[in-house]
Length: 445
Image 1 (cartoon, one colour):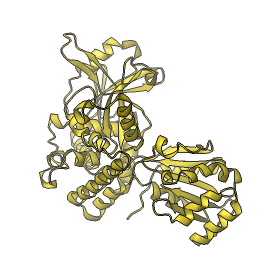
Image 2: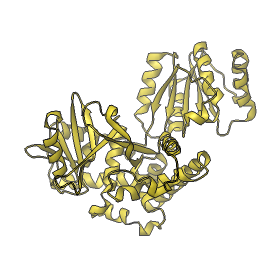
Image 3: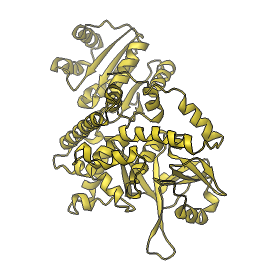
Image 4: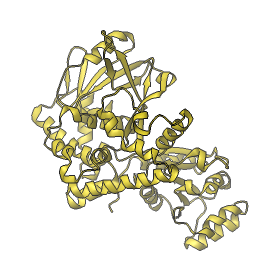
């Protein structure tokens, strides 16, 4: 499998140079986003030697060593002997892969960092704080980084395109229209990203086969892997049900995820919150919370009982939406490729915008409020905090330019709004108040 360029590599390099072993790094992310591959690549390029302990397959004698962490000379000698690697002081890295499977290894970070002989990177998937670390001391010497599926720029790099995103950024900054013909090409390129997604295995399959059915098979395997993981932490299957229902819930156009329609109403509030916590910690989803008072401090006014869920990777979302059908029946593939996605499939665009905003470091919030008649609701799909102002976003799956919700919101909160955006599929355009952005410019917001 190819090794893809990832932006997190530069953050690891910055950590190594600036912290000089004073902290360890914990890279958290969903399964198959490329954590292990990235860390191994980093170790091979930036250190004289390294040891990778994969706790999903580590033998008992290696795990047992963490019961002797107070005897560090013995610990390091045995580790080098077992893996056949010579460690060099301040020039070697030790990797704890899938560290959630060995809580004592995570606890040992405190003593290993204080020893300062080597650097340490941990990776973790489906980390459940309550289940996996309830009996250990979380090391304060642990610095965390989140790893997401490949973003659009990383996807373009994988396809050999190292210039497009620079040009798109200039287009965004200069508010430059490119014309319908070029926009159609840019949208064709972006729709391929929506279909394939950013899971490295899926991108690798695209490059090797140029066959979307083969890509879809890989994505189905990843979804099955996630569902198996969910059952390990919740044998009732309710977490899997919550995950599988995300496309249907978004398609229903409800202003929140209707959890009782998925798992019934017999579950207590505390159990429901626990299930949601487990799902959120898996990083397989992106949560968007309703904000009751839209302003700069949206976290202070978010409603934890009103939320939407998005799949963290839109390529997986597309497959999940029709996983009960054969690939040849998957109308999303057909319609996205031909640019004939109907309005009732617009939730695919909403999911990819959520993914791109989250990958850019934004927390996700949305807002609904009743219309003048009170019979319906206006909805702002996403709200961004910028300086002491906010930027409302409405997402459309077409070139449709009506924006009643944006107009009503900006009238209601005119003093709070910096700039208002309508994200759609046509060329960049500005009317008197609203900036119309083609969806591929979302990363620059």
